[in-house]
Length: 458
Ligand SMILES: Cc1cc2nc3c(=O)[nH]c(=O)nc-3n(C[C@H](O)[C@H](O)[C@H](O)COP(=O)(O)O)c2cc1C
Ligand code: SF4
Image (cartoon, rainbow, N blue to C red; front, side):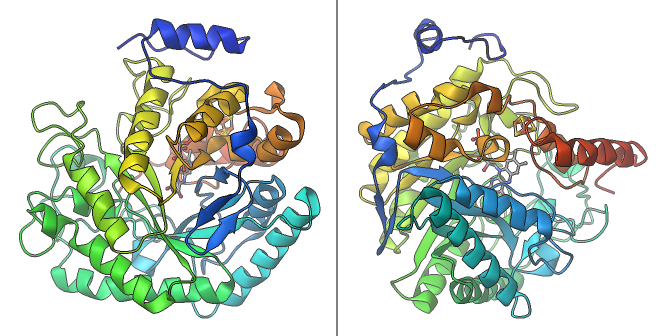
């Protein structure tokens, strides 16, 4: 591993040279046409191969319905021209919310989601041509260890104890384990949420299993007893039965997706996808078996992610220049972190066959990402290029890339982690740098409020 460095490339050639010096397997192509390629997903088609990744704003109304900030965010994303909008984490039960303003869809507010979808689809068509209709996928979630449904107190719901994560997430010896009966009943809540999402006009739902929230931690619950823990068969049971139940309820004309962790960067027996002796070594055996299981059970779309954004190695999820408070600077170059994410997607796409996989890790590359995204699409290393922080900072990226063949570098995300810091401070988040009129004051406010609290998880 090389030393961490901030982004310092003036030209594509400089970045290519650094990628070569670091011996990374990063590919570049100046033919950007693959980004414009329409993509089949289940029975539907996305108008191009760029996707907005799910990005929580922690800013819905208290009942989970879209606030003005939420409406603004998705209208900007839709107008930006991506072929696929992967909507942020939306809780399936109130106790499973990661914060009191997390998105939540229910029978009372479904009409507000339907109205917003009409508005966002209209914005997409207005800015990108009448035929442009992005696919809208809603991410369904239960936050498990990271539940904080009201105020600032943590209310963790955990499938197993974890000596590294327990002290950092408010879990004590007396915190009860989530019961098998709770999990049995939870599947039906995913089904109900999926049916509501269909009613609202979404094109599909994601059974979220990444970033060490409940379903992600279940995949790694080696020490849990009973039918949801221990063996691979048991650890994947909840995800399998939920995919099956959702598919049976929504029919074939609705996308069932999963965004899942392929590699936790967490030691055995608490991590998924990691070598038992060396947690930094990827062991593809179980992740590949998981992909085969999901494909056999009818998923139409996958997105692989990795790591635990709440723990001390967030570069595994998102390469950055500056970390959020209290996070050490990693012992690797961001191009190496990027290459690891690309390699995961390459392997997952190979295992998934015709089922499209959305790749991630592109934002840190700034104005040069289209050249790497196009290369990955062209050689089948992914089916969509997914953009997270870049979408907060520069929502018009797909439109600019497709119409002008380039990005404006002064609009790019600078990977400063301030949007993450707002989340950690329990505020409402967005781009503090490029959307500063709205988010710089919210950042300051969240910082100040957090300074008055000693332990955010208590
Ligand atoms: C503020 C913030 C909120 C996020 N919210 C979600 C989320 O709701 N669901 C999810 O799967 N990932 C979430 N992510 C992770 C992103 O989708 C993405 O995987 C990550 O930022 C890496 O992509 P990027 O390099 O393009 O930013 C979030 C990331 C950030 C910084
Ligand atoms: S605050 Fe803006 S510039 Fe900083 S990481 Fe987030 S999206 Fe990027």
